[in-house]
Length: 535
Image (cartoon, rainbow, N blue to C red):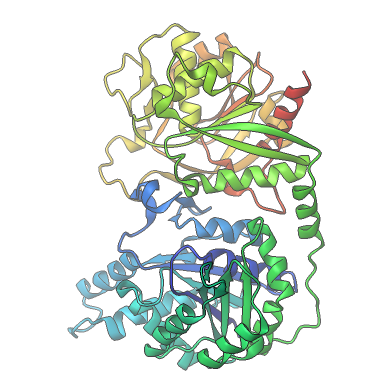
């Protein structure tokens, strides 16, 4: 029977439930268990696909085309697995399913209520991953914090699930905060006590309390938390601030969190976790032989979570190359003809980030012109590729009014145009070209050299695409389509033939980079930046 671990949070958001869940999942996986993780978000949006990055950070896309919470990226990066639509549910999606059932008459005329109809749907989704027997443990992260009004149906569902499955098949981990008051020079447990009290008021008692803290928890503090929160002394787990999120599995292993979970779920395994590959990764990450500085040009650089997967892909690539990568964030809206050289000065490479809309596009185009003319290693992702195409059309092909129809619908030279099957779509949510598609790489190209294979699959999230009517002109001038979808002939990769390293991708390579499988494009890009220092 599949066992379930529920992770809740209290006191404040952004404590790191996703990292704790991912780290625990990795530790259990390292013991030979089959593990999956899912996230339940209390917001009413159907998914984060239409949400501004300033609101919710990056929108993570799965293999099957689901637009999901960014925590699913952590799940994949830590566990080296593919998630799907089944791994993420929102209040909006749950209510939509219940309302559609009501409209079809499936409730036989009964009054539809939060209990049991909404909680039954939440429960159905919570148990979905475990029904086929593919996993030994399913970890479920409940978004938000205990006490939030929108979280109440989820907490009630947890209460019901715990009662139905029993304590040996379903345990609760509560992540909370132990603040340090510098004036008093002591850690305070009262916020944790109140958080657990709030949880218990809804009929849910945690089995394990994980404490985010800036300082080491003394045994006295642990005893106090155990006493007032009714948990075992050894089930009070320290989650101290770490140098990197990739330290967390080892820190939790030191706290024996995985063993405590196994004991409470009565899972018998004599296999000790094999953490050798993870430790080698950390050793290379923390002991670099070189360092480089890469510019990240985007529209949302003020918010780190807006480019979370790109940041982590650079971490993975830096470990492979034993090179510390410093990221300089550059707001594309602030780039002009007069300051672009100053802003990009001293950079070993530049990544132009994805995005939507007109704001900041001209700044990206100006930056790419400087990058192309000065032979700086370049990686463009999604809109980054499209801006590279527009820049090349304007300044090399001399099509001065070239643009994308996303920003300029009446442009005489639509080198980037809306895909044919997207032109009649009016609804924004879930209607883009989403998920994994095949790409065939051209023999002899830089992309083929980087991937070391002819056919690849990558994840997409876009409506606009390179206009193939201009393909011959671009090729003749030195920008080739080195990657093409074999079924639709859509261009997936563009690169310059007379540049040391200039690649743009319509897909999002950052979404498939993991600790154990760093993405080859990021590894190659970092390597090219290092080699550029030597020239």
